[in-house]
Image (cartoon, rainbow, N blue to C red; front, side, top):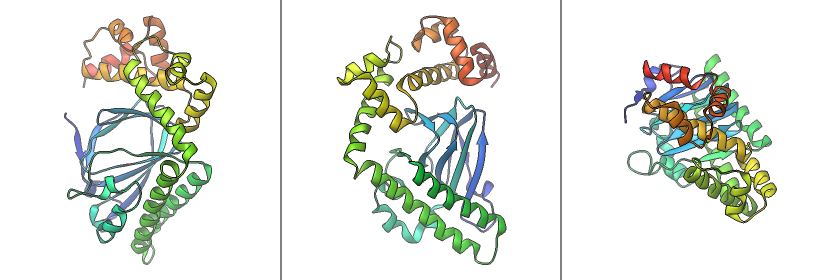
Amino acid sequence: MNYDMLNYNEIKNSPDSAITVIECCHSTQINMHAHDFYEFVYVEEGFTVHYYGESTTILTEGDMFAICPGVPHAYTGLHYTKVYNCIFTREAVADKLPELSAMPGLDSIFGGNNGHKNQEWIRIRLDTAERMRITSVLDRMVEEQRQKQLGWELVQNALLYQFITLFSRYYAGHYATNPSEKAYINYVVKILKYIEQNYAEDIDLNKMAAHLDISPDYLSRQFKKIMGLSPAVFLRSYRLARAMNIIRCDSAENLSDISAAVGYKHLSHFSREFKSFTGVTPSEYKNSCSKL
């Protein structure tokens, strides 16, 4: 797999700072890349498709996740997405690595000899109160690095530990201590796997619910609670993200074949939804990929 490697020294806000917070808005595809630093991402607004290893995930506002150094990932299907990127070097947290690695959700990020124990990807969907607290900490970090008043780097370091601690607390709260939330997540995980295995077939909400032996209404409510969108919207987005991936990998592929391969019976229907999702027609996207 070919991808760009980003270097912290080329991105950092200050020459001597090992921590940088970037507020940015995306509306175009971000190709597969990796970096030599840790990255915690918080999605404040919008909707995008995220590729991480072999997984394809729909991200919506309120999602927070971490990317370890050296692990490739990409975004596509961007409409308008506003994110905070909290990036930092291993040196920024070196004095607290044992404590961080012992906290829920952080071992796979900070454990191991190479800075991360494995490539497990953790995504947390925050509730309203959690979102407000996270953005408050991130905004303070942005303000400190902007003003650079006396002792700002010390404050920045303290805020980073607060941010990472909140990530661990919210991970524990959503995945470790809430039985009902865990039950919902189990349903959602099973449906995500079902969609991944059957997206090319004629499936809908009723078939998804029947697969789990629960009612369509119950599945729809719990799926939306965890994912922030309905199973039908996720299925459509997943199919179109897969179509974009096929076109990127082989721009010579026939559009009718691609349409059928991702579960659309009619090319016209596929074309309408593709343009709604990406802002361009399949042919226009295909042409842009062939020029890369």
